[in-house]
Length: 566
Image (cartoon, rainbow, N blue to C red):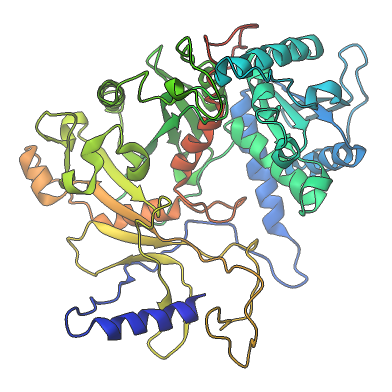
């Protein structure tokens, strides 16, 4: 915890003298730590905040559906799960009483309220939620055996799934947690079900039975629906308070590289670049979330992007590969050279950037995620206001668009790439603090972002010591402390004085890097969520990667996806 971390830090500092000296502490560079969030009510005052959140969710979902009904199929194993999900939906959206069921259409529940129409069909999950019958024949590649089991489950789903009636559809399925299937490798049906329903044009959201989790059913039902709305693209960032230098019509584009190896969910390696565009509405109003369709070279609704990603083709394992854990021929590096992957990704990035010239754009990338296939994002290759690809010389960022800015984020990345941290007030009090942190140098481009501790974090006594118990806690703690991570924000490209001069635009307003770092920091906040690990557009791009599920021997088969156009 921060108190003990501060003591360890002081001990290290003392031991390093006089060979090394401590650099100055980072300080807050802005007072605007959060965007325009809805105010929290206190005491016995009416909960106006929840009513405002309901109105916003409705508006976001109405925009995402674009006048079409939402179809939901609920496949349940526990009656309690079914009841909780049906009770939570009208609460989240402020829906009126459920209308009479339509036996001909098979709808159990139907709401039509204020231009929003939702149809729900419920049915027992039955054999759909059972373990996958994967062949144990180790003489054949593991990816092939899994693909065969997927095809069998796809046939079962096709027989039991209703046809969509023109609108977007989401299946919510209750399946056991992955630990229930640990005894038999690859038998967890989750990924097979996602593939199967996607082939029929349905998005998927999963919920675990109460026996497999400690969280309350009402809490899990709420998050199940919120993630369903997210998959439909019904989410918008709140209005920012980063500063006057941020253009009013700014759009966000986030890139995320899905990197699967032979140990991935389908045992099939693939690299797939995901691009998500978020266009906020005026003044923080309801915006649009879209994804890049690389085949058509066009932006499509986020829900359609997910279905397109599910069609990612898989490689065919080399003949003669055998054995667990092996199938080494399907680890990725052998089947597709790294150089070709790099060229592929960089070509897609350049193509995408030239499509963003119509309005101001902030490009968000995660350096730890992309640098393997975009080496010029490595620390030693970064140059202010420049962008490099391959072996070509760096180019001015403004070549790709006069109103393009670029920001790289970096987290610990599983290897402690960013520093651990704690906050202090200079008077001996130590703890956590949210905000944007920097050196105070107006020319600095590197900042730190720390978010508030979420309400879901365990409440532990302040001053609890792990290594040296004190009178306040005489025994070692029985739980691990949760410490909010530090996200590094690097404003790689903006309208600096030099960048404007190099592009022949002297006299234009000069950007303040701290405003763009503050903007990225504020994108971690949303009224419906605890602080996110990354800015919202990157969060959406990373989650879209859950639909990249290549199957050995080919792409998708079965029914065509519905029209989820604008």
